[in-house]
Amino acid sequence: KWETYDEKMRDELDFKMALYSAIIDRMDQNIGRIVDKLKAAGRLDNTLILFMVDNGVPGTGVHDWRGLFAKNDRNPETRVDNYKEWGRLGGWTSSSGRGWANLSNAPFRMYKRYTHEGGVATPLIVHWPAGFKAKGELRHAPSHIIDVAPTCLSAAGLSSKGMVGKSLLPVFAKDSEKVRTLYWEHEGNRAVRKGNYKLVAMHDTPWELYDMSQDRSELKDLSETMPTKAKELRLLYENWAKRVGALPWNEVLQTKKRPIKK
Image (cartoon, rainbow, N blue to C red; front, side, top):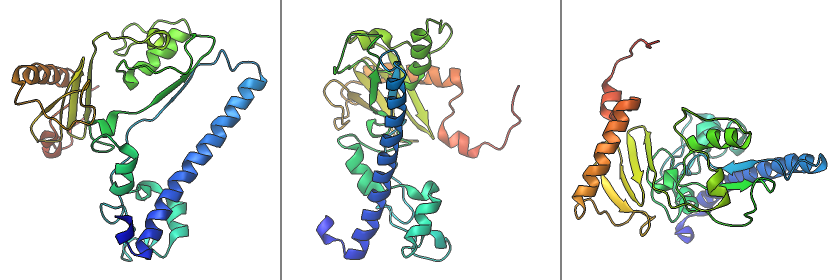
């Protein structure tokens, strides 16, 4: 609990969130500048704007699970008494730690790198008044970053034939309940979703099965009570992984450098 931390630790965690807040503020200001320019040029209503997040917040930090600073001189730029230099350098050390990550990703489980919802469930905000009439509405159709390019091509009147993603323009106009099969793999964390059911696993741990229509937080594993559904999705994932070359993580770690095939 926050009240159990001493003042020094609170200062560290405050500083982490201050950096994050500054990033959001700077981003907001500069997106605003782009919007103002489009508005001044009379092009805002006929500009397709897609604002999205690439993944959940990372649950990593410099020192421990809270994301506290390093406590030794091996990396002096990240020492607790060197805030200014630490903030200037940024890089991987700028992660906020699991405490703030849990808050940011709630109510979803896990973080960036993982294929549970805390890593892959991200918002997409769309603006295009000239392209569709819907305004201020929610859409629940599952989609993926692979859909961005086909969507932009479709908006420009071009074909996206041969691409694995789908144009989201029909979904922007009207929500869809069409069943799709989507796949994820990152550093051995893997998942497949078909319709409302999602099969997900971390590295070499057993598969977990969830009903996304009832359990977006992935708290009730159905893999033992619905083994047939779990097997169906597992086979789909294995076929996809073979097709795209997504190796099991233990094989990746054991594989020596290989020449790139042209």
